[in-house]
Length: 134
Image (cartoon, rainbow, N blue to C red; front, side, top):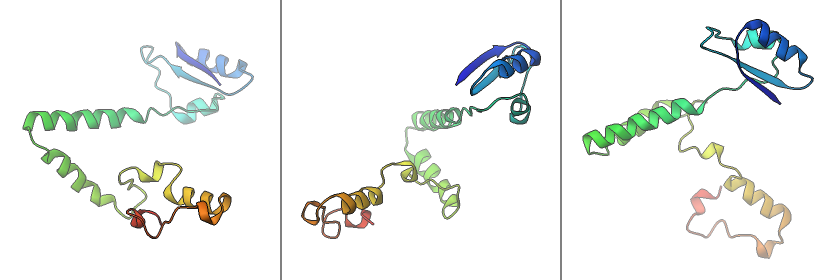
C-alpha cells in the first residue's frame, strides 16, 4: 500500500492515485482547504480508507481521568459504566471489550477439543472459572 500525505490539490490526488499500480490512499492537506469524502477519494481511485478511530477513545479516556482527578472520586467511572448499560443487547455494546479478544475462551476450548487428547484437555466444568468457560 502506498500512502500519500499532504497533497495540495485534488489534481495531485487524482494523479497520484491514477499512477499508483497497487493499493493506495491519500490524505490531502487540510491547510490547502481540501476536506475529502470517502466517495470522492474512491471515485479518484483510492482503494483503502483509513479511519482514525482511536482518537475519540483517547480523548474520552483523558476526559474521564481528568474528572476523577478533579473530583478525587471514582464516581465518574461508576457513572460512565452505568451509562453503558443503555447499549446492552444492541450491536453497539462492547462490554469490557471481550468481543475483541482473540482467541476467545470458546476458541481455545474448540482448539483443545480438536487437537488435544482428552486426557490433556482442561476440565472446563470443575474449575474456578467454570462460568467463563462456555
